[in-house]
Length: 436
Image (tube, rainbow, N blue to C red):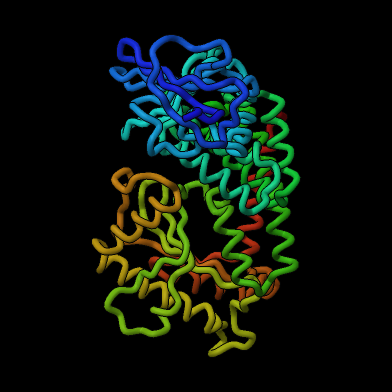
């Protein structure tokens, strides 16, 4: 019976199996195997070879790739390996183009391998002659990413892939080798960044800048000059946003919750963790309390817990009339303080349960292990942010009564929105005292 073309034939020699194919074959069609003796014929090329003892499969690639071959490590056959043609080992159409574009933008790439060992980790070695190793798990992530991009008709697939590759290697390489440089070419990196920046809004851009600054500061790369310049710039933005929110959203509590969540660690630099919407009520039959958890829980630099409750800037602080010649706090203010006292009591009484719950929330938000989080729930304090003092400051008696009553709360600090704003302006002026 005549053997159909195209075909791939197998040749075994000294523990290594060689698989040859005709140069003109269409690898997407079916192939037929035949065990033959002897090296390749003139019209054949090496499809792949398998080193049985070393568990290495070396696959030939076309000229469109930056390397002539790639290796599949810790595997004796192509069975069960997805994203390739089973008989040739080359990457399937579409996915191969996607992966090839990414590999071509890695300057100096001389070797590429996929490690199928169950404990393998993606890694990269060398500076000029770069060797890239992808774990099987991360390789499968690329297949899934390509499938997602294809199914959703997503544009700029190469940049999606490069972003994913850098994400994988950032997580698994940079933390170990701080001297490692980015694998993307400068041109590709710039193109990706510029295209990304075109589609983000002002708030997202500032968040990226702040995160980069915080990371640089954590690594000790921020000197005093950079610190003062950037913090002054960050304060300028926060002050402008704060002023705009006071003007446009005096009664929007949700807007202020989001703003403070984004900026609390700058407004109050002694805070290192801020978490939202955490129920501090245990075994407490107060329906209002159960349905209205405290807005924030903050952890300061000394690991102390502090509760933070927000009311809006438009809330009235003091009564408009006197009672026995005294002005008194409005009900919104006294109710919030009473509720905070209950929160503090239940927080301390249920400290073991709350300790676990708060650590879990912090771990999830900040991406750190729970065992690295230290907390102290001993005599916790609270902050109530409410109203504006400018509404009462012109009336001396009313202002004095307000100051007296705000200090009567033992564990609660009552602070107004305009006082926070004034504090930010003073902080900015302090940073600007010395010329940059």
